[in-house]
Amino acid sequence: MNEPGLEKAMDTLQYLSQDSEARRLYEARQKYLHDEVSMVEGAKAAGIMEGKLLVARNLLATGMDCANVAKLTGLSEREMKSTEL
Image 1 (tube, rainbow, N blue to C red):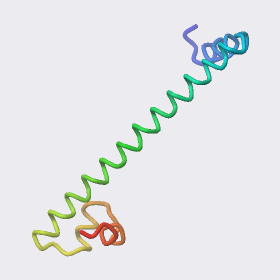
Image 2: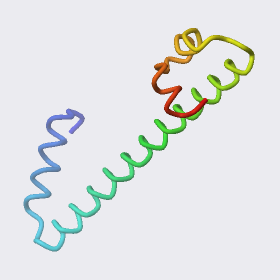
Image 3: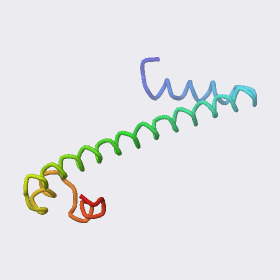
Image 4: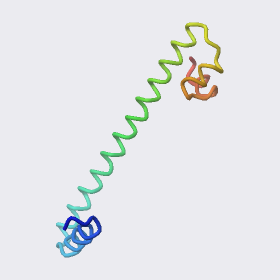
């Protein structure tokens, strides 16, 4: 049972042999887990963007030109302009 493919096949077989209520609960849990991962990934991406914008603001405040700030932060000049840095 240490083979990933065999383990997945056993899980699928177990899933298909469940009654309809157990299957519904299983699907609801899978959806919840998927939604949770999506939410965490979205929050992570938003946090990274917020950090980049903060660094960009600080670099611009020191007098660095927009092109170099974009290069250093990985932000496009359009992204920086759209967030009103």
